[in-house]
Image (cartoon, rainbow, N blue to C red; front, side):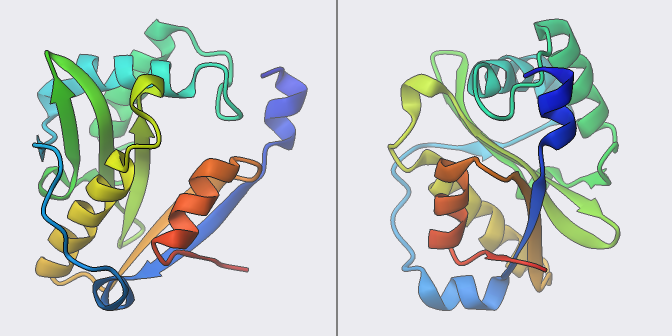
Length: 169
């Protein structure tokens, strides 16, 4: 993405009332084994982030090294305190396939990242991990979850809307 395109990229704020999600979504048996994310997962998650965003509307021309630095910053609190017990990753043979990273941003849980490797898209992994994050947040007493999505990222917007997120004005 060129600098001009990046400057024009608009982010939409979306919010989910966790109680609404719990009522709308059926609890399903997990299809994939997942574990909570730790700060030691920086390299694993940076590789996934680079692969997931490269060539998409969210690609801002970052190099793998830049993505690693961004992931380090994210896990160190750039977008609020990292909430490892509410963040999940699905791995296969030492490679991350999908992940959610939740932080506490301005006093509210923020789905800072939801990403899936291109070879694993459209299998429901992101939806399952978001569901796990939502359930963990609800169990910890949180009422809402917010996220920011790039306007024009239709697959992500569709997923979030299907899960009950609504665009805030």
